[in-house]
Image (cartoon, rainbow, N blue to C red; front, side, top):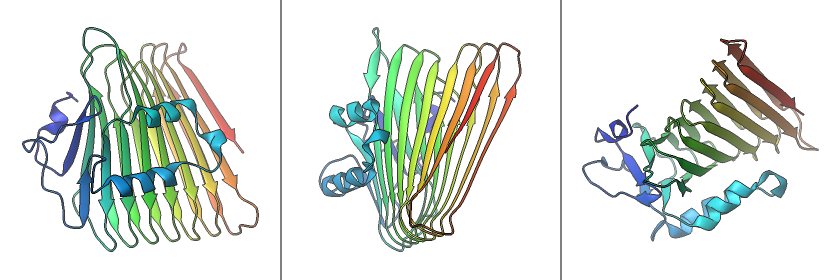
Length: 286
């Protein structure tokens, strides 16, 4: 979609242009009751720091250099905080726009989301931009409280000259339920990394994605699901349609920690190559 069409209606929305918060009332609808939103400034600064700390994994081998660069950049950050026992009936929309100039640019957008116990939220992250060479290095942290439910959509439709690298960290408490879906439609090179920790008993998770590289595009998906508690369920389903000389890949890893029981994990990758010159790679990773 056109980069400006994502801001065309007055729905609950946070808009960031090259990582700077665009607090424009003509583009931002009213915030629902029980939801605090904005950039990483007071009074959200303390909450944002707590979400970011939760997203930092204890296993630092899964914390890569791109994440470190994003944290070091310290640009404006989209922050969504949902109070306990709040049912947010309308989806929240976070929009990150890349607007290259005459020279290539690098942007490091970040989104932090906290959903307290017993609450329900649907959030859409959109990454779009105008034409021109650019690097988008995105980081998203989602902290899901006990019994909370989150539906998360990520839509990447950046310009053909763009390189998009993204990492989503999700931390789930007991009894929580998360559905996270990623759609990779644009960029010359795109990498979608998802890292989830099921930290409380009886947590459920579904992670899925669709990637559609064509021409000489390259789209990679890297998923790690950690069952750190008992009686948790996780599902992975990724589908790719690859055309031309493009390349698509899926790498999925499941970790079951010692002393946990009754965990159920499933992983599925389905790929359709439209041309003999297209390349597809799938790597189940125990």
